[in-house]
Image 1 (cartoon, rainbow, N blue to C red):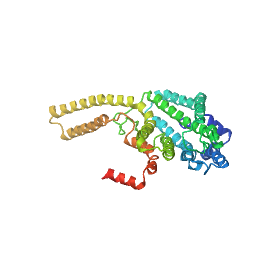
Image 2: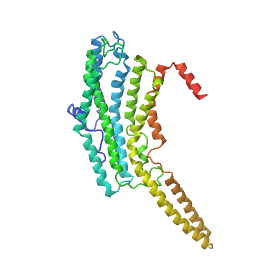
Image 3: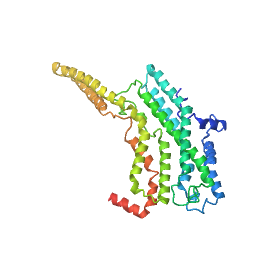
Image 4: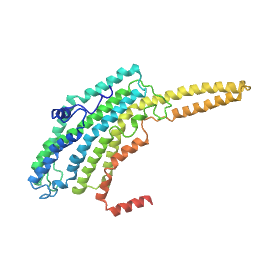
Length: 382
């Protein structure tokens, strides 16, 4: 069943929530999840920093001024959980559309269901989460000795590699949990990519003259994109990371525009890469359609010429009807010829672009005074 399919459910964290009776069938539990994880990640940092008197003072960068930390746990972490229902709904909608639109016939239904079964197994894969945990442990080992600030901070209040109590908590609890959530979303994206790749190998009933210009696969790129909410969360996290560096490490945003461009390209890649697996099938459909429709139109016009020239006494209304049919066939051929090689259009690209840029725009106000920024915009326009 399509409704039973989900790339969201499964894994160690869901089992933990189930044991804690947070996940209740038929009732929303996302806010319970968020509050529980905030209790493990952000609230202890506030309490421990207050205990060490580094919450609002005593060091150059107290906790309350750390934009990156607050953004990570108060904005990005809730966004990752709030995105689950949207991603789940959108992915189910996309998968069900393959059946509802008739793209996959009864003879290919077994292959289609096998692809979903493999995706379900990947969602429940223990080995995948073991690898994630190993990566998190490696990250902890690196973070223990890393101090990127030359100033004293709530993390390193002594100006060396020694950690505060809040720093110990963030290294061994808060940050590993957050990194595990990020890696879990990366795994879900890989599952989605592989699922669409397996589906792309199934024999489709694509229609080259379909008005979506993708043979009937245009629904794949219809906004909102499946992983759009997650790319927005990543954009917010990236912007917060840049903000910290701009405020405390003399990082100049305009001097590192290549880093921003790379990030924008990454966001676009996350959104459209799974759709690119259908390029070969769409291109083949267009190529075959040009030959098939071209041959049929040639046959039609050959019959039309015979009627027009050899049977000039034929009713004029019949000749007009044949000519009208020819015009319709011409429109069909143009539709085939104008097929896009990808199952998305400019709206998909624009959505991805805006998702990556919007969180970064406020950073310009940190680097440039508002009047200088307005003057720059006016110079660009006039």
